[in-house]
Length: 502
Image 1: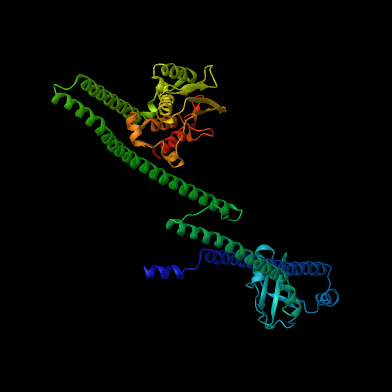
Image 2 (image 1 turned 60 degrees about the vertical axis):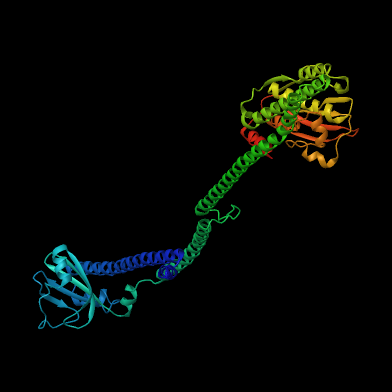
């Protein structure tokens, strides 16, 4: 691993390698272009010299046709070019005249000279930078074939000709300057690209390490920057999705654990609550059985007490069934349009059958049909349990049921009494299962400790909320909401579950 790390450290960064590649490519292209341009310009100037010499050959031939002496031709007509060398060659390659070599003794056949050979084949030819065998000087030769005569002119490579054939270096320096400028621009661009790539590499390292990455850091506004920003945004979304998934898993696990805890607690509380009525029933019956001569009035009193405990036991089992239904099968309840005014009317009518000491006046600020969307039995249980709670514990004479507000989706109800209320320390626990403000008095009155727990869970099953406080004029005041129509969504159901297990 150390060797691999050293190898990675020894490799140049990507933007430097890219810059070197671009620099090499651009300089090679420029070198090739300059070489081509140099040869092209040199060829152009060579052809210019050849064109002028060919024109001189044409002029010499015309003068010879006019029978002008060859020596006079150079002296009179080419006196402005004293270095011009004129040579007359027949088609056999023999030199008949050479302005630079009057003697013909040492003249050799010129048929194989490159410019002469080319002139014999195509009518004209030239040779650059060739040394003369007779004068040992270097010349630029240009030959033209006219019928049986070849006229050749030549210019020696003196400073004038050399300067003329020399290429213009202004263009060369200009191209070098442009190439240098482009190299600087390429460096800046590749360095910017390298920074983006380095930031992407840093992002990949942090992502691989599982760090939290936000989409706030922006890349430059170009194609790579847009791609980089999109990658980071997608990764950030995946992170949030993973976090939401983990939270949901934790919430589901917590809910499952809470459900198990509540079931265990409910089982323990039920066992505890069942002991008292069962023990009382067994005790009374055992006394009656063991004492056959027991006074009839005492026997009847024991049977009445046994019956009361059996009734309490029946109420407890009924409430346990209700709370279990809410825990397990809440989503399968029979939801429909329910008239709350009708439910309150039924509860008011049932009040007349109670003993005079248990009766309370029910005061309601609505009498016309008031429809909510819910389970009829469960909604009846809500108002019945609140009424039973007020009768058993408030010590008041009146119950007040009002609609305090409404919006497009919900009614807000207030259920209160004019009793004594409870101490503030008890208020947060009134909806807890089997919680009693006065345990002895609650059992004496036959309470199961589940009534208000049923109320709260029933309201939550209807996607509402419920709170309790001591009223301004005494007694407890319950404030809760119920839906006007079907508004249940997946989000609300999840919220209900969380409230239900809290």
